[in-house]
Picture 1 (cartoon, rainbow, N blue to C red):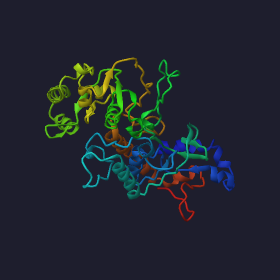
Picture 2 (picture 1 turned 90 degrees about the vertical axis):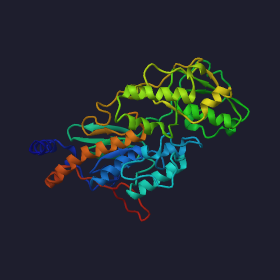
Picture 3 (picture 1 turned 120 degrees about the horizontal axis):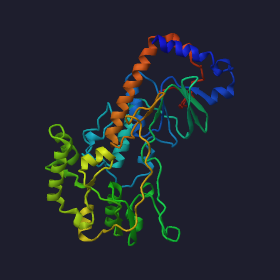
Picture 4 (picture 1 turned 180 degrees about the vertical axis):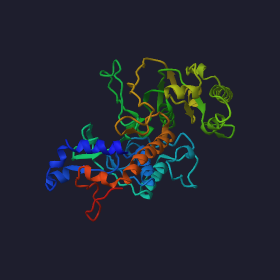
Length: 397
């Protein structure tokens, strides 16, 4: 700790902010010192991080570009969406789903849960601010986060923008001459508007398969483009959720044996998916998920529609994929106080695990500094206004 104190003292000798007149009203509105972490994104990952930090006594500030929490869920998901996994595997840290919620909560029920979560932990994000840049100031040991409204300075930066924050529409030959609509799933709401129309769905993941089913149920004629081999599993087997059963078996058996079990039962329940043009990868579903992050499809009725021919399947032309992002060294922690939540390709369960790890990591530094309150006078003092309330006051969460 003495080395850390000397480091801070040395930095202050070259601290340009020490000589700034903080009485300037323009500066006080533009530059905000955040004593705890700045969290970018008010989705499930950001909320989980804020709650875990608060539980450990560490304040934080969430910056959200939209006007609500969980904007992806509220604004960019289709109407029939339900959680694909049982609720116990999708709950955020420190708060369970209501007991009267079904095993697979609907989109609206999940949003209700997130809103209740934010209220319980008094999480009040700064809305309608998009992060323009985030730079680490080495001479200060601080992160400078710029938005269209101003700047925020903090020792820690937590990125919780989500894996699906930006829609990616691949460039496909002939698309410019195509006269119909091209719609990303983030803009798809219901198959009702496509009644009586032919629709090509590119991608056979969980979203693509469920959109095909929804189109079928609204009397559209969907065709499904399959880019690669895919594992399709029943959502439930042996009277319980496939995911829950897998997690239980992994406590006692090696992953390869569990994969073999899942494939045998899936063959008995679903038949040979390869005969439908949906070949399986060489690696088992759990091993493939562990190595590449590729999630198996949990069938909710789409496969029956493919078997009857109501949904046409075709390999066709699509070999497009999203650009890979360089992963953090261990999935959630970077360097210089940089963290990421929800990028480990493990869904909501993984985001919760990330949030707990990050909060524990930051808490160790936070408690160390609390034992040395003289550290605070070495840090720049900014006008710490962060969130306007009905009475015009601002506060941290």
